[in-house]
Image (tube, rainbow, N blue to C red; front, side, top):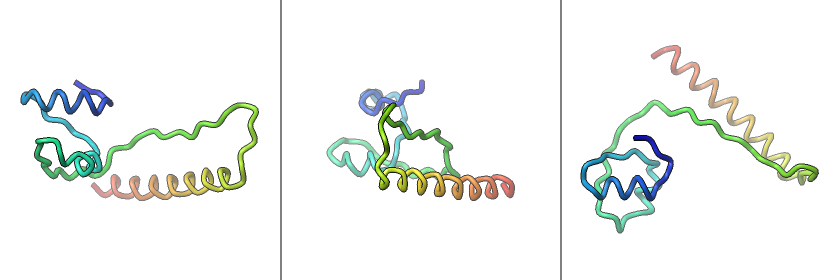
Length: 88
């Protein structure tokens, strides 16, 4: 089963018959929940990320700069991931 729902993932895990994968930050933010974190090394999981804006609205200069920086970081990460996968 695949789901993006954290509550559903936690519910299934609580039933005792499922193992879930979630961002590490979720485990740190949920110390009150009775589950054990098992460290697993992944080389990275690609994800699509989008920036959405409202039609007919002008972006503030700071928002434009943020989007430019995000694109630059994404391009650098793509190059790093491509180089890693080429050697694997």
